Length: 328
Length: 285
Image (cartoon, rainbow over all chains, first blue to last red; front, side, top):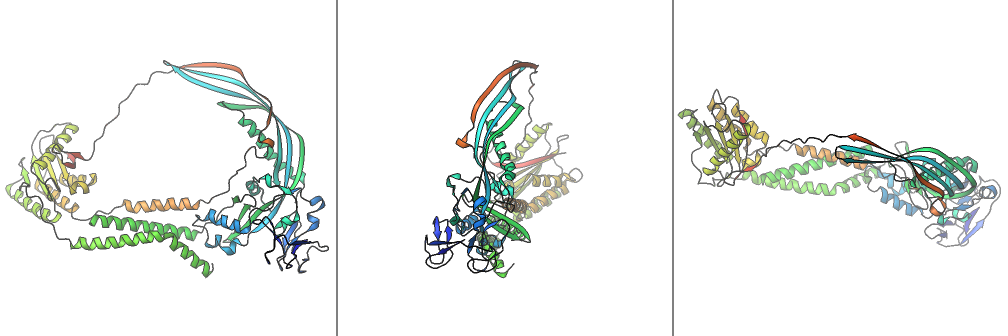
């Protein structure tokens, strides 16, 4: 499907600034008209150009007419997301934030924050499995408290041994694990947390103007990752309730999952693929919270130039000041 | 890299160091102006007329009359050049055999001699230096008392250098040793501004710190709270107990530590009994 403008026929997209549909061609708001298409998904329904579509792509942009196309069969039926968080940050907002965050990175390549480069950023709706867990966790351990005091010339050491027991029920809601091969797991973990208050039922309108994938993995396959997060959190929560001991040694731990539910959601991520000297420096920006993850490349030439200049200028200033002062 | 990016890089670079370049330029002008006026400065006239005219006191009698006269001549020439009083005093006097006493007494004798004779080139108790050389058997050695500009300019190393120059052959040929004293002092005070080696080191350190700090780029951190996905934010505790099961006490005998004393130190600058700030140092034979 594509969303066309009733007024001018242009491609209507979702605007995070306006929090609604917007036609960038004639400035109309809420003028969208959904146009469903059938047949070969490799043919652009607007211009009939050939569109490269990968196995999991559910929304893309036509390379010829720049229209955003959403593939019905990949967002419906078994692939219909339960929830999604629409993009809260537009490309312009993210560009501004990127410039602010990295303006102190003097050694970054000159075009790292240039308009041309930043415009290559693309917004992706990443498929996530959001698992709900009801678990029971029991823990038994031995804790020791040591008290030392001195009377006269004798030092006393008193050791108290405690039996620690905890039995907790925890219900987890929507522990996320991304179901996209393209997106590196450790980066997607750093994209967290998403604020679920803004979770909404799926609406294809939100996808217009962005790229998207359907889930690459089934819910069961991704359960391992969310379960690991859930278990870590459970253990840490119980650990937080055990305080005041000098040393603790674990005796028994047992975790039981009582119920489990998988939800399918699309979460927004801006991706900036920057290349420098044939090396990739990918940046990922949470499309809801604007948390930025990525490593800034360093230009060796700049390090030398700035370092040497600072050294030279500083030496000059000190020597001129010193000799001027001494000769006064 | 395209021309445009290169131009932008140069622009950024100039903008980044703008203030530094301006400061450097201002200091360069300041340096040039002071340098010219420094070179054109006329030799100043003696400011202190109350000082004793005598510069060489050979109380230990280790010099001949001719030698003393030659030393006076040398001192007169050197004083005009460096604009500091140069005084030489030899004694043959018991000042104490312990290092502490020797140093204290030599220092006081030297400082007081300088003060009482109203030395100082620019003003009373101003710029000058005095070498007190003791020839007493077993308590021999020199003490150098510095004052005014000499005090400000002489480091401990400079004082040692002068004393070393004297010490070198004072026993064999006192006259030559005292010539060396005059030479060493006039060489060190010759208006030559010592080169500040530390000023080469500081920028290197600053540069390394700058590069190290700038190399660090902000990275995304794990900001997920443990209870991020927990309904209600906290788990439900069905049972929670911390039960004391055992308690035991061990004893250990610790002997009281015996106290130990610390060492002392000596300072560089000091006030003489006359209230004049002197620097100095000594070298025993």
